[in-house]
Length: 105
Image (cartoon, rainbow, N blue to C red; front, top):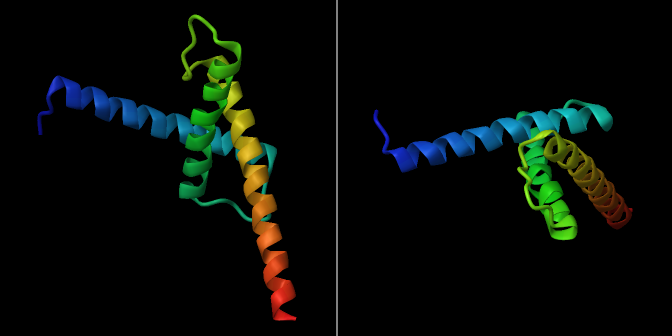
């Protein structure tokens, strides 16, 4: 199947972000290992969210002239952001479990 140039560019970009987000999610998972391994989609979601959030916050605060989110600096920012997102998700999960546990008593 042949795609137009613009469509092929979008497919390449989406696949690049999926790959980058997956790697970021796996690295973030190394810093905060869970009792059980996260699913592929969990790593992908947290990694992609971190890949978007970290560099975006950096650009809003620092306002660099030339910055590409898929770079070594962008990778570090994405991993830090993914670790923070993982912490927030775990805190919310444990808080929800605690609230459910109190209702069941």
